[in-house]
Image 1 (cartoon, rainbow, N blue to C red):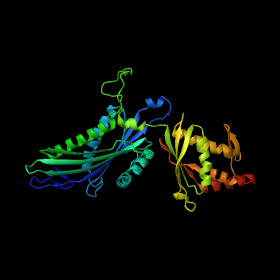
Image 2 (cartoon, one colour; image 1 turned 135 degrees about the vertical axis):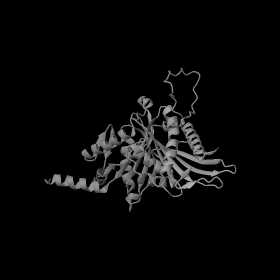
Image 3 (cartoon, one colour; image 1 turned 120 degrees about the horizontal axis):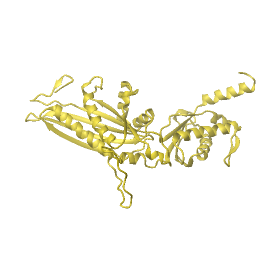
Image 4 (tube, rainbow, N blue to C red; image 1 turned 90 degrees about the vertical axis):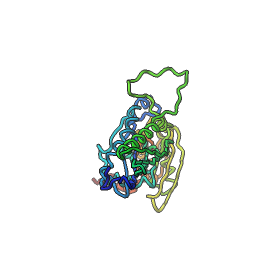
Length: 366
């Protein structure tokens, strides 16, 4: 079998090293935390293959596309059987340069790479698989293929899903093409089973499940269980704060906005001389809402406070802000929001623009 101009010589050994990254980005349709509708929504999955062989990307080695399409197909088969909705990102807008850049980043920071993919495709989670493939001729002329597989999963807030795997596969056949196809099938089946096998055992007292159509299974498995675990806890992030007072001003809004049951400050890094390095994170427990609606509620509350001149009472909670604090609130804008994370930024240029516009309006200028 030829690959990139090389053959597996019957008397010698040809070693092919391939590293693959498969991002299984899990997309939830409409998330209704605390609402039964969340149980009925299908989980949509986008399978994204990344690989490099001896420093060459997919464009330089088009032959490899066939092998990884086959591998992805076996994984997709398992997911579809468990009622996931599978989406192909390359049918959308994924460019090859972005594909290769993200692959490089995933080697050093897989959680960050997964988080970016979750944001890009509006997903709940991502699963990363690294694969190293070697093949050689044995002494009796057979072709031996060995695949080393490692995998890890994260949700859209970079939290581990607890579905890590590590396994080695050895397959020997007369022809290398047959050995590679069989090895890829085994890898795809193992990854698919790891993500879809359920860890929940039904209790005898539970009523029997309703019948389902042939060829499908209602249990989505461990991946679904982990994605839907603690759905009420999300992350609210604020970038750009340069003083503790700014954190307290925004924190009061987070703690009292509609849809938040409780909020706990988990991280605070404030650089007064470098807003770009500042980050504050709350872990928020939400009720009867979802992250995108919460984002809207927070902006609406800030607008209400500003419209009242910084002195108002909303649902029994008094708000008393100084002029400087109001200027800061005027600069708050939304950032990237996912199904597990809500992002805000203090944009001081935006605040100055609003101040100038309001002053011009008061002075009678357009």
